Length: 325
Picture 1: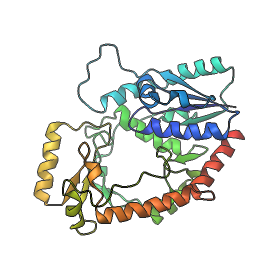
Picture 2 (picture 1 turned 135 degrees about the vertical axis):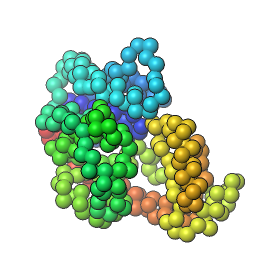
Picture 3 (picture 1 turned 90 degrees about the vertical axis):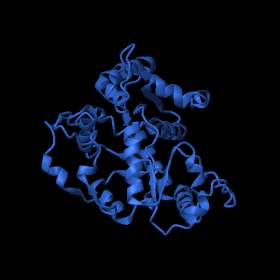
């Protein structure tokens, strides 16, 4: 058996995927895994752990699409779009190398959903733009609050009626996931709102929630509740339930100063209590109510990850599907 793994090299995508692959490699030791990712991302996630990888995992670098001596404009999506334009040829070249070195043809393909080209029957065409009337509509997803389409980022819904590589990619994902043999999700089914879980199950009979595979189990203990050096804990405890807005933009997006100022002005005018995740502010969020909720989630996660739990059973099903190809 030879399993090829295609990683999306941005955010925490590749890290979650390599953790899944390591679990699979230890469960199916006779299977060879080829992990394809950009050199920069590989260097980042393997800087301290490459020696501890199972022997049946080999990493390969794919081109990131960035021209030599390229000067970035500051647009956080630019690097992503350069990479997208380089696909799928960069993955095909690395895949040929993996097949040649191992002497084994690919029997199974595991790919990040963002790499929609990985499905041989994926629809790789894009539209000519969006219907302006869409912006007046809302997205209604069972179990989640209403979302106005006009509030979607321009990278998702371009306002100039011109598709971008990233918006095109998102459209392809919608087609590809419906055709995938198995849809593996880095989540626990116990944590979904029940209406959302039922809706997903009705649409994807092949849905496997294998848990937070990028996190160590059990999760680290929270700091003592007496540690409140900034006063954030006591402030958070004084707020009513579901009244505090939490703001964070992840590890990829670099918000321009002008947009940061606009957001700050909007928060000031709205008078909504908020926590803004800047640098290490996350360590100060363990207010009493938050601690209680985190503990409840932790208990659900441990139960799901235990023998017989839903996440454990989903992982076993994934191994069976992969090794029986």
